[in-house]
Length: 547
Figure 1 (cartoon, rainbow, N blue to C red):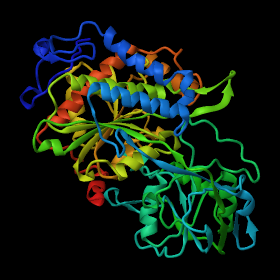
Figure 2 (figure 1 turned 45 degrees about the vertical axis):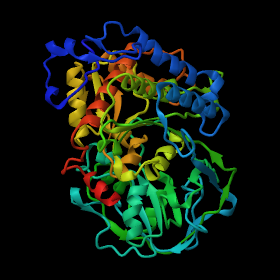
Figure 3 (figure 1 turned 90 degrees about the horizontal axis):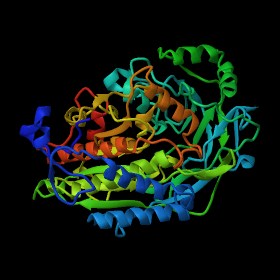
């Protein structure tokens, strides 16, 4: 594969492939610029793999955010950033502390009833500990269909509704005309809650259908306590302000609740699963709900932030973020006798490319804009490290021009196709297409949009702040061996101890991806204009809302 790190200038965007050999190339194995394409990827591949080997070693015990193993990983990334020459850009040298509070529902002191009809916690619904204040509610309930407010898609379940003091029941899917990344984004409870809360709602009860192909939910049992949620110690970061009750219905509970209004939940579900318009109606009676919570010991899980300062006197005050989450699941349930969830691909691989991309860029001409390299914490706890950084960045928020995020990009086979999540939403997509073309890699849209991958990792928190973002996966074509390899990995290794150092990995492909990412970063950092959402993108409004 003719592969090189292209030093891209505006007049060279369409450089013909025969001229690539004359372009300067940077590799982590070289300390100086060398003409011609990379002929031997082995040194770069070994350098990338060495980071994965350290981060996914059993000694780090799965890098659960806040654990001793996680802090070993933090120290490792700090040392790599320092060796590369990145400047500390945290709040305490390279670190930006993220303080979290584990919060759980006390099921023995909690309840959910409509008038005198009680609903069983566990089998009918789960209460979520993410509530504001005392968690006691006496209020009417209304069904609001999908509960979405997407004016650009001509969808607004909230407009014209009197929701003051009411609890809203929602079918947690999306209409058929909401497609691609926006379909995934529409499923985020916090995004729904913004519009509902602004209209006066005080609570939210959802039935969320499982994603196609998702593993079965745990068996519901009476008084079954949901796992703790992690909340920020800083109340200014509250993502669900004013939410007094937050519940997730099981199908059994939804059937009971809708029957109380004389409605067939089976019919509602069939309509919602087809993406067709859903009705709005009030439920009879008054909801009486109590969500009692208890908190655990505060947890500290810092982000790690390194700065490559730009060379242009003006543009260096703008920042491109390159990110990857550092944490994984830690120690958990034994699978075939193994309790350590090493997270080699999820996401030691991404952090390894974060480091190697920084090394590649540090070896060449300094980019015009500054670049922040951020190893994020607590992604596995709900993308909390990125939410903290995107909300309280260590540089002025309006100066952040974009985010290129890596999470489990899965270099399991050669890099011939690259799935780019967010490809059609902003001008970053055009930059990614151009760089792929220069490297004989074919860009692809998200091929499994129902998996919601665009909102299931850290880039979503930059999007919420109005910042254009991309995320990546090694791509494949339908019915190919690569498709089978990809799908088998998700079924067999995702969030399991077998995501370890013994699995087959295409290390050369990973090194080539790091090179491609460095080219993309340099192109964006050196461009005259900052990235922008396309006007037709539903995310375009987030930039204005975040200002």
